[in-house]
Structure formats: structure tokens, C-alpha cells
Image (cartoon, rainbow, N blue to C red):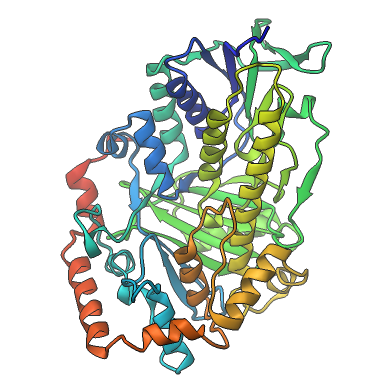
Length: 498
């Protein structure tokens, strides 16, 4: 006789544990499933996050009112990332959350930009993108209607502590129970499954399914897993993050900024009444004291002591083992360049809900989960590595090291195909779409040897007047938006915080 899962314990700290608990509670609200949280010690984190637009979808599923969220967390909006110095001193480009132009008889407009670059007339993609143009002007409005005004989307800039507190309250409102004591030890059953969690006060917390959101420490899954792991450090040598809260920016744009550095890259992002800044670096090329000095020089007047977090780029080969599922950094560790850390946890949660077993003894769902999440993790790895491989590299030993090893076969094929014909080939389970790769590769200065024949024929029908009209219309729409800071204040003035 089958036995259904009736009790789930989610263990961990930070936003991921509360997203997972709230999401499972919401998904299981019509089933007799109890969802509880056992907190663990903080496992190190960024001062905050820049997210992909998928965070909006998760908020919608959890019933979060966006203005309420912005108001209570001091978050801001994100239309783009700006990458400076990644192709050498003086270089820079945008990667916006939106379309580039409008299709030409079914051909993506970015192909026109490639053809112009081939002809020696390169143009910045943001000139033909509402999201990109608005990001450059430090303006913001939500998408609306049809056509250009609906041709973009957005993510958020979020402070870690404020978001964690907000999600904790939301999860409890949805009925998630929180154990009063923190995790002590993991107890196993005779069959090798996790039987219960022993808390520091001696309480025994039993469940049928355990979700590990304890970060790289993997406090739960390491007890039931062989710990086999794919190591990505040959391609992604950064293994430290130092970050802090910084002073507020003047007229902040809805943009995450990254700047290539001697041993990694610096970043900054705006909040409503403050900002965040950090450095992602390799300890093989820069020690922690030098990293602190680099961050302080980049962003003077830090409001909080810089937090150093260690990580190792890679993923578990199996993140669902027996009755334990790992989400977030317990499953995959990846530098935050693409802003996909929370997104990957959301993917894991959504896949868990989709594959939720009818019988607690079933294992086939776990095997499929591992296949799907492995592919998703590898795709995000490739997109992250591509930032280091696009165009020419900055000078220096660190930057030489990022290109020393041949890229993963999947990435090599994608880059080779683009170099030959401007074609961007997507595989299953890729987070970033064709247009995202176009922003990255065009911005990085990659120009293909040729454009596909049928594409050239379609682009030949595009008139210069059409191009000028589109560019003018894009700029007009972007300029009509209010300043980003004004939009935040008008929509959701932040709660006063210390």
C-alpha cells in the first residue's frame, strides 16, 4: 500500500529556505501536507541580490503584492546589467531584460546589428531596446500595453537581511511552522534515509521529506549522498565574495554594475535608501586583506563590515538523494555574475513540486529531478563562463587563467556556431534565451564571419528609414518614463531602517 508524504521539513537560513517553505506550503495547500522549517546558522551570503525577472513570477505564485514588497524591503528595480572592463580598459556594454528591436519577417532584429558590424558599422543594442535605453537614462516604468511598451521585463535589487525577514513573515502567514530551536544533528533510519533532525534543545523533528537549504555546508544531504561533484573551478576560478552595504547612490539607475578587476570583478547595485557593493575574486590571485582594500577603494564609506564568503564553483551530481532534496547552494555553487542564484533555487522548487511523488518510497522522481536540474545548472555555468570568453580579455594573470582550459563542449559548440554564422543555438533547460545570448555576445564585441543566407535576404528588405524610426521611437518611450528613484518613491516609499 502506498504511503503519501505528509510532513516536509525545510532546513536552512536566508531567503532560499523561506522561498522553499512558502512555495511548498502554497503548492500543497489542498493536500494534507505539513510544512515546517528548522533554521540553521547563517551560512554566509552576499549583502544582497540582483535577480532575474523570474523572481516576479515566484512572488506572484506566493501572493506577494509588489509595491508592498518594495516598500518593506527597500528594494529597487533592475532593467539591466552593465559590464565594464570585461574586454579590456575602457570597454563596456549592457545586458538588458528586453528585446532588441522588432522582428524582420520572423528574423530577430539583433541579426541586423550583426550585419552592420560585419559592414564596419557597429551599433549599441540599447539604441534599439526600450529596457536598454531606459537603463542608460536611469528611468523606469513597468511594461504595459503592446508593442515597444511591452517589449521588456525586469528583476530586482534586494538586500539579504530585509528579504529574509520579509519572506519569513510571509511563510508563517501561509501556515509554515517554525521549530523554536536550531538544527543540531541529523539522524538516519536503518534504510539510510533521514529519519529526523535532532535540534539543539533536544527536540526530535521527524518528517517524510527533507529539503536542504543550508548552503554549501549541505547540513542534510551530505549524510545521505556520496558527495560526487562536478568541479567548475578550471573555468571559473573565483572562490571568494566580499560584500557590504554602502551609501545611497545619487540618481540610481535600474542597473547592476560589474567592473572587471585584477583578480575578479567588482559590483554595485542600488537600494531605495542605500546601496550594495562587493568583490568576487580568486584567492589564488588576491588575498582577503587585499580584497577588502580593493572594495573600500571602489566604494568608500561602507556602512557595514565587509562579509567574506567562500565558495567553490560546481554542482552535486545528485541533488535529490533518498528522501532529501538540496536547493540553492547546497546543490549548486556559482558566482553571482548572471544574477541567477535565487533563480536556480526557484527552478529546483518548481521541479520538486512538478515531480512531487505520490508514494514516499518512490525514487523515479528523484532521478528525473537530478537530470533536469543537472542540465539547468550546466546551462547557467555555460552562460556565466561566456562572460569571460566573449571578445578580447583584459590583461593579467587572473584573466589569462579564465581562458586557460578549453570551454565545456556545450559552450564551445555554441560559441563556434555563432562565430561561423551568427546563429545562437539553444538546448533544453536553458534559463537564458536567445536574446540574452545576443546581448552578451554583441556586447562583448563578438562578430561572426558571416550571416546565414536566408537571414541576409530578409534583412535586405529593411529600409534605413525603418531603422531610424525605430531608434527614435525607442528613445521616445524610454524618455517618457519617470526617473527610477522617483518611481520607487512614488510607488512604494521605503520603510525607515537602521
